[in-house]
Image (cartoon, rainbow, N blue to C red; front, side, top):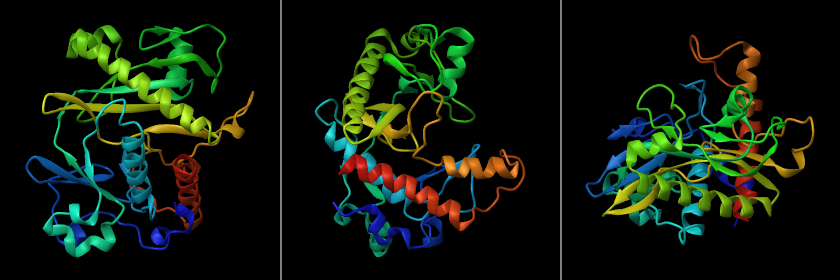
Length: 302
């Protein structure tokens, strides 16, 4: 596979959405836009970037291609564990309305089966970080899962744990216990969500670790397709996971984050935390963010 660092995707302007092309998406998220084809959807991944729950005015050229390619890679590699909603990403899979823009959209779209979404996010943690570490410090547990005392930030957990959250249409997702999940979706489905989430994480983490990457945590989403549970949305991307280079981990060290951490650091340095107009990003922050995304993609998919 050609290195993403060498692809022309980084020299193009950032692709910020379908509307400038005269196409109105049926649904629009912070990063992805969706066209509804009836029984199927086309998901287009833009180069937009959000921080502190705000979409920034500066996109990261090529970011959408990287996110899309990583998802497709994992859907294929882990298909033996659970089917996914992925149908295809060949130019021939584009609907007629998008065909004139094939060169622009190549690599950043996928055609998928429409699914009935399970209304939870299935988070798996293999390492202690972020809100998980905050919960552990406060309660000695995460989502009701007790953990041994004495763990520090960025420590590896004795074994991966399943820590689901709500799936909020607006605002923040909220952590829930396995018992709460069982009451929401039923005991049998809750058990299957936990089983398949841990299986996906464990196999992906082993693959990544062999390539010098730690997957500290990630989130999965699932849905029903023709009565069968399937993996949907995105798959183990830098937007849905924490990726750290293995050689950046050590006692008393904060690992390097292979995601948009350079953007967050820059914005915090400006004193901006989501209030007021979102600032534009300087070229050096854009370049550093491109490099981090490309680094994780190249290692994972080599």
